[in-house]
Image 1 (spheres, rainbow, N blue to C red):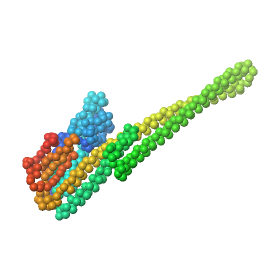
Image 2: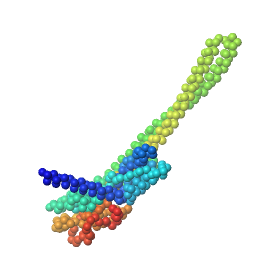
Image 3: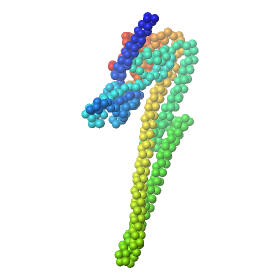
Length: 439
């Protein structure tokens, strides 16, 4: 019993040590990792209150933000900050300095930027589950293949499997292509909403406008644009009608006020005349009192009219503000939807590119050759497709090489001559061409 307990304690200690070492490796990777589009960041800003020593967190900057395709990350107050190609420490320092300059502080606040989600990587070729997977720091080619289900087993019905994969890939491509075209049309409609101009669809859609699916997409986007504009215009028209009503009401009240002024002048003259007669004993005091009461009533009525005019003018000003708020609200909604649409479009295009690679692999691979050389699956060749700016690079790789977010790992059996990785040395992770040395 003591022996078993001792073994369990040693096993638990080993697991704890392995976990701590992995966590330390993750931390070092996060410090040197260079950010890129689709990375999701968690930003926190705080400072110490003088005198109390209490930490105060800036709530406006606490949240998660995504690096845009342009490489910028949009933050409150300071605007867009360059993130692509920089570490989280560099972005945090830039943010703190901008906040210090913006707020006129003597010292920079404490800003922290952490990666909560990396952009995905893709595995294609001779693996069990090719596709898109979530990236993690210090991910090697071999680990990526393991995540994708390991090397593809050579089945007896390989030809049927290739055919099935090709059909599935074509179906995925058709679905992704339709989604992409719908997002492009939506983006064009949102741009028209933001600019308040007629919608103009890209030539890619207009040239295919006779196709039933494309025609449906364009028709729905035009209808959505017209419906939104009509809804806002209807509210604006109602507010304008209300303003016209208030203007007419002000005119009527002004005319009523003028008549009241005339009546007041007449009654004041009458009161003066009656007061003279009362002083001479030619008229009774009740007539003088009645005239005074009439004047007081007219003055009260005039005050009510003036207050009503002021309220009507205030309502006109409020209606003008409501009209501006309606237009601003519609534009803000369109801007937010436009940003979301661009992100979805980028994700769809990345998935579509991966689907094209999968289709090409499924259609080109020769089942007969693969079956005849099944031992080639034991030591496959690896290629990494890495996009650098607008240019794509194809790099030979070994199973210990480290990946970057957004990489596409192509796994293929080693057929015939040794693959491109046969001449490479071993002994730990290798830094690929074009990969930062600190990664």
